[in-house]
Length: 354
Image (cartoon, rainbow, N blue to C red):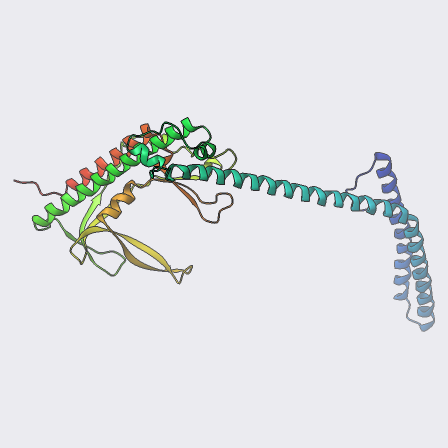
């Protein structure tokens, strides 16, 4: 039976093509049977004479087969030409459609990148100094508001009222974040001073995978019952179609524990185990202590970011401060509660007076 070919044609055309292909195959098949029969006769006779006759019969059958193939192919050639022309036409159409789809996809991608860049530029306006030397965000922090905005600001931000409300909200969040960091730093500093004055009670030797042995205190945090973070996991108001909502990562991780340690310099700080592969990308591991100062730990605890790892048109991740995009009514109570809870855990280490 002829092999099925997916080619466009009217029902009548397809029926005629199928009949022509079937006729071509049937003619060849009949001659092929004669050729195979003649070939079998060669092996049935042992005498030279009969073998010569059988060979002559096979040669005649082979010549007849080739003649029939040529005749059938010639008869089928017009049909084949039509089908191949249709296939070539369809393939050319498909290639053109693929090229158009690619160009359209690239056009849309370029448009998305441009809209995202424009949005990023809009975010930068809040920190660009104005004629008086202060940036809009600095003015908001001082409780000031200009009587009018320069034309370049108005053209860059669009709806000035909505933009200015967002800038003022970000200032409230940034101030709350700074207060939270300061509260944690003060609690740790107070605890460290009290421990040092009391002779470091409760300090223990801490051994783990790194070769270096630490002296310090394990802090086991309990972060239960903190304010809900659902409202904090709201994507920034990037233009529609630039970044899918599910691609945003909200950095709200809180460590379950930490080691408060005394570094060799005598200063209090923090350490956690760090593992890296050796060689890079290999199968072995090397271990070390990742050490941070009190200030670094507090900033890391409160530092909240919104990240997208593959933004359009960028090779590196896009990280945005959560303070500049979160609702203050959700963000401020959250960081205040985190700072309060962390401070309570550190204050619990302070020796109680008898």
